[in-house]
Length: 86
Image 1: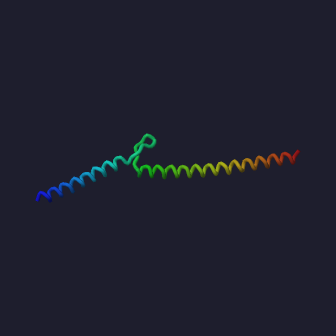
Image 2: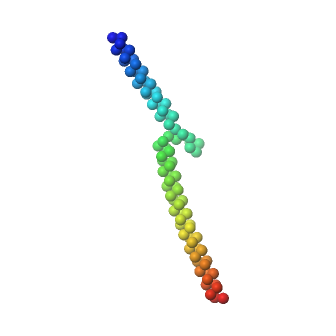
């Protein structure tokens, strides 16, 4: 009987240690970003938000470049027209 009790207590201790380790591991799986503590799911959401924002900014940049190119083209055309008029 003592042998079974000893084995059962060892198994119980192992399970308790596993649960304690899992608790410590999951609570320590956080980091600080922009002065906020975040876990992996929050970091994934933040990364997705930043990717969308970056994509939007790239689109805006491309549109601005297109406008600048049109302006440069129009200005060159104006200079050419003024030269023809003289």
